[in-house]
View (tube, helix red, strand yellow):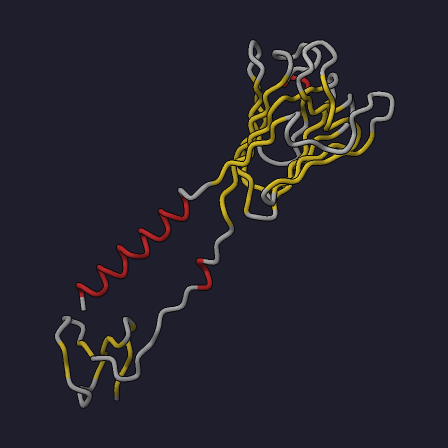
Length: 200
């Protein structure tokens, strides 16, 4: 009985640990994974969906191209929101790589007001990082326009561990509280299918 309980406990821990480490990262690359808007004279709501993850803006361009470098850009205009949504599990981390550093125009420091989790950025670098545990969240480009070249979204898959049920066996052996196997005619508290049962 003890060996069976130990094995079941170890198997459950292995299942839980494998689920907790089974994260997936979906990478959106501007210029490759494009939205529908590219004309800076006609911005609007735009989005890109990939592998169950959607990145969107209330007003911007997700098929933009830098006129100097010709590199693709995801543009979120000033005072507009950038939203990440997942249908394949909760988002735990998002890293945005921008066209400028820190709080300089187009940099990651222009995003503020995370609706969930926490957002930080490198003051002398081009990346900003959101961390949390949510199916969706938004950031606002409140200080200036933000231009991203890459968005990496890490997701923990949805699980139904709470729905796992132990099988019960009507003919399961009985054990007394000392762990010794007893017959079906035994009277008192016994352990059957891993649970204490009073037999009268």
